[in-house]
Length: 190
Image (cartoon, rainbow, N blue to C red):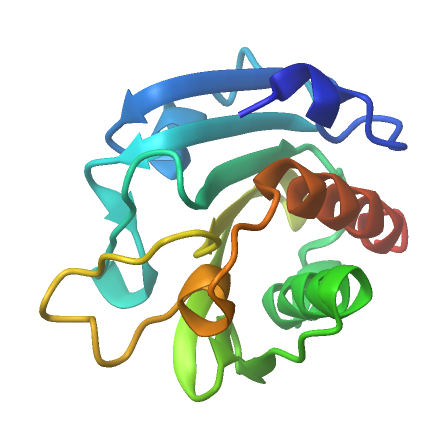
């Protein structure tokens, strides 16, 4: 993963600081542990997660050097009411990113799943902390299957990736850059 390329995205805060791990239990858990020491817009990015978090306590599987597994840390200092529907809006940002880059149409299974040809290709996990109705921090976890071809037996019939569907490699950096550029505009609306 070319971290320096991602840092050159046309953003003001998101992705200017990136904590990169070859292997980690969970980007979301790492962000929670370090939330008090990270700057606004920090991305925790991992090649491999051993205990990635999906929704409803499920595990998000990922193999090394093939997918996008990251958590974006934000300090929006807005009223909690502003976050209503945010997870779906973030899924829409990824949907727009993939359509814009590759002409591929993803479907959204609200509130947080991204589907391609009826199979899950990605998921969004948002978690926030508040103090007196103000959001003190927001963690946006992204799992997106890009070049994965080997899925665990329990999910191989229900999961997919861009490469599995279209038989070619895609640039994870390009997807991340376009995604965070679009996301920053969306977050600015909060």
